[in-house]
Image (cartoon, rainbow over all chains, first blue to last red; front, side):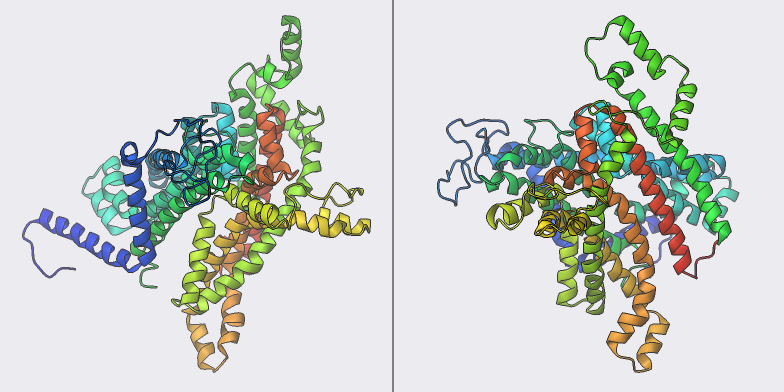
Length: 303
Length: 335
């Protein structure tokens, strides 16, 4: 990879990683859509982070004198409310800004839970095989037999409707994908020479699993994490829309849509804008995911 | 081949038992007294409570309850809806044709547009057509379909007034259910305008439900096509002087469609999940709306039965897709 020589092993490894990153960025940058998606995603992150500063109003402040005010460019618009107000006089723009927090939060939490648990279970299943593997895979088959939104809905019915429970339900529903992916990757790696070499030199099971094998299985997991980040946002919004996720007056985008449903023919902005927010965020993440896949997956590289 | 089928069936049995355990556990995991949940009555006297406890069998050991539940399933007994007092099994099959009709139309919509779109994108790879087709597909893939449905209603029903807002057919028409499919029944009834009415009710839900499968199929077709197009036999076909149309449409397409068929099969779960949202938005009287309504009405026996039936359907369809895949792809070995 590099023609410079290093005398110390550790240095070589470090240089290798930087090279990998540079190589990754080189391929990622090629994909214009992915770069745009990344910038938009960073923008949403910034909005979520500085919501208190950016938002012109509080997310649940009601202005009784301005119910269903249209956006400012329409007749009857009010400069105080750039994107109009909803049926109880809350500023739509501010609610959208604060809503980004919930969506990103859902994505982060769901991905963290399902990634950590899924990777551990998948590693163990692929590494130890045998009865443990069979039982785990059958359980995953059972989870996969239910359409994910339906299972999430039923789980929320058991746990009680709230954003936290919606996140738990979605994390459970997404679990099998990580387990299967990790297991398949581990099974592909564990027969290779470097694993045998490590084992022969006396590396223990835990270290073998997490330190030797796992780093070589990361690429598909990173791609899966991106895709499940976006589907977590979609599912949480869908649950909110059905009244089983975040509860009013939380400015969660799906919940906002549910509240706005009865006004769809009278006030387009209360229905259209939260949906656009969901769509753009999910689209940005999916664009990024496509770029990551192309840059990380050596099989598809340069195709 | 027979061994392959048997092996696949063998895998199905533990999964199905697991699904029954999951749906059995559902009622027992719900917060609150299961007797109250199942009885759906308020202010029970202690005597009535005890009688119901016995009637539902909640006083017996769990494994005995489960065994009884399992035997019931095989006799088509999924319990009784708390709201309508009808057997859940009958309720399910009264509503299922509506969902089936919608799902079939959605998948036809997705295939008819998705496969040609994927082929064209692959054939024009890297060009503006490819970029716009794949860009659109990614937007479709990222679509919150509950919002998409609302937009469709606003535009086509609200502004253009082309289509009705909800339901399966205009209330003007009444005819007996023969197949349960509104399109076929309306034709059979011979009433003027009935078919058009059924069609106009169906079109928006079809588009909304078909959007995500359409995007997935288009993306999958493109990548399968690209993979096949780089193979030697395609180069040979080109070298023989065959037209581009023939190479792509005949030689390459045949092999490219194999993974696409699997993808189409896997959309069944997506469709049944999407039906929950689509049917809720369009008040479509199918099982998706029924499930949501049942959850809100706390009609838990219906939810439990619906979970089991839907999982069963997904499993059977996945099995068929697997077998079909084995049948059409001679490169797969069955051992």
